[in-house]
Image 1: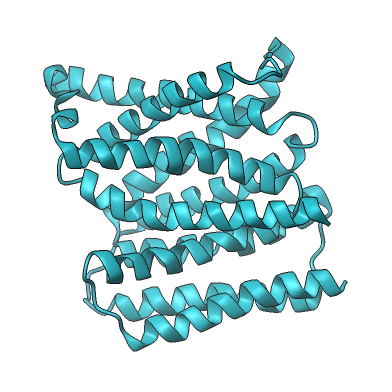
Image 2 (image 1 turned 45 degrees about the horizontal axis):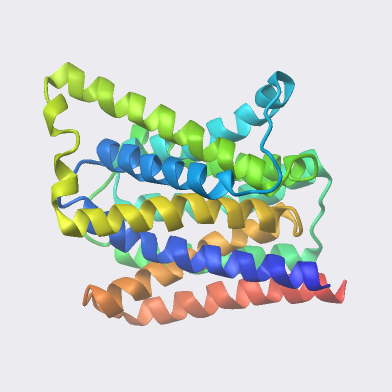
Length: 300
């Protein structure tokens, strides 16, 4: 029971870090473009992981056969998830993206049932849909500006959501074979390599390589990138992998909806955004869904 309590604590800390990360992304975007933010974010995360895991008593070994098994996990998250998300947001609205990504728990529920044989009860399914409905309601009410995204953007955001769902399922399986530290270290280093490669190629093509490190001269960017790298990339990867080693993939995916709620209220408190009535209604649905799902599981 104690290990499950620790898993839920890890999931809650993960949720709060992710929830506040969008505020720091907004601050970083004032100084750098998305591809550079991803590159610098995972460079900081990668360097931090090398320092942290160098003190790990258990040596991180990566035989060739293990590398091949873990590679798909790192491709799904962070590589494909962030790439699809960034380019998808370029072609569609944030409200539409939020609605589509709110479906991650449903996609995870279906994939976990098929691949992991983790079947949810009728009550758990009902509360999962309740939580998803809360997120969709908030973003739908926020999207009355009339701006529409195109089909390509919607497709890319859906692929981002699917990548996250596949990660939840695959990580749930791999955490039974590898330590949380091994998975986290590999995912972080892979993210550092792939995102820096993309950013450098972009700068070379536009002859702006000298601008690559310019954002670090801005103190606000430096603070934001430290949060995004150390906490929102490295620590959340560790917490997510740990939680998935103890609780089902579908339950863990529900916390992404709670992160959305925290993002909204962080904007209201720190960025002076307006609290609307539909935020409160959606929050009730989200929290009721998460609590109901986990209470149903405890009874079972």
